[in-house]
Amino acid sequence: MSILIVIACILLLVVLVTYVKINPFIAFLLVSLLAGYLLNIPIIDLAKAVQKGMGDTLGSLVAVIILGAMLGKLVAQTGAAQQISSFLIKLFGQKNLAWGLMVTGFVIGIPLFYNVGFVLMVPLIFTIANQYKINPIFTGIPMMASMSVAHGFLPPHPSPAALVGQFNANMGTTLLYGTIIAIPAIILAGPVFATRFKNFLVKDSDMFKLEKMDESKLPSVAASFVAALSPVVLLIITTIFEFQIGKEDPLFPIIKFVADPSIVMLFAIIIATFAIGISKTRNMEKVMNIYTDSVKEVGMILLIIAGAGALKEILLVSGVSKEIAMKLQTLPFPPLVLGWLMAAIIRVSVGSATIAGLTAAGMIYPIIETANIDPNLMVLSIGAGSLMFSHINDSGFWLFKEYFNLTVGETIKTWSTMESIVSVVGLIGVLVLEKMLF
Image (cartoon, rainbow, N blue to C red; front, side, top):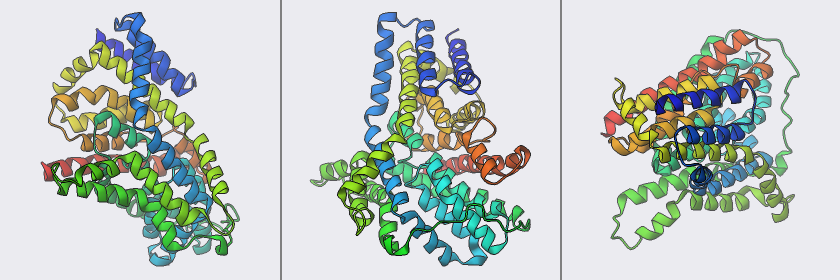
């Protein structure tokens, strides 16, 4: 009976978010309270469970997500993103445009939130399409595939960072595994898939002509790459050091401290502030104003993560999560496939990759404790599932449709198919990596 209650509450969450259009944070709170009541949690403890779930989930994530938003905003506002994209396009040349845009999307996608990166890069996509008289979809898909993979697979993006926290995974290891899995995913969903649209010529258009910043005001190419990639480099370096030295080593406490994701992001922000922030036209006050503005962009994301944490806590306190885990383990699917499948189903139903990943994590969490599963791989499996088949209930679907002036059917053939390729290849990559490591 309790499992049926959980299923009914998840369906209610889908209805409230998708059809009634209730704010996802409010929907999570309402469903969490209803689920707790129906699962016989004493009403006096119900509010405490919700508060604990929100606090425990956000405790280790607030600094990472907010500092990540600050870094992304700075990379965009200072023109560092423009420098990176221009350099990579020149490096790869006209014959390899799709590959150049794929790499550009991946590098830009690491510090930037998806919607910000999308809007920022669309002018570049159309400018290149007009310049070389090719279909903008051919230039757009490789870049969008890369940014989508970064959004779903790689910390410090909100969803994978939250999953790392929920599963007690290691952010550096998850980033390392995620990068390995991302490579085939973005190649197949990007340049390879985009070749289908290469020969469809389009008329020249002034739409989204790129308004470049004055080059004299841009940071150097080296400084731009250092700022954008500093979190990745720092996380990978500290992770390698953690593996190489033992707990008895006097350096271990220092490495452990520096390897903490929030400390890594703090160092990254300090590096970026002096590498690309402060310049002839910007002083410290202006840089801090950029950081202040960036917080507005992640407020709702943090609330959604908090709401998902509340629902997870209700499932744990009621004991139904263990019951669900026992039932799931009887299904003829490996745990990693189960995590992917649950996230994929919720993604198709709700539309939001973040909600899909966090909701699936709350239900699959007990399996991590009872089965011998690498939590880093489970983060990536659920992350891949959360990208499955974006369609009309996802804002990304409509962004792509409207910017590229497509019909709904054409958007499904392009955008939705691309997202599905990323999701499936991501799952295959997780399973192959599991076989290689264990």
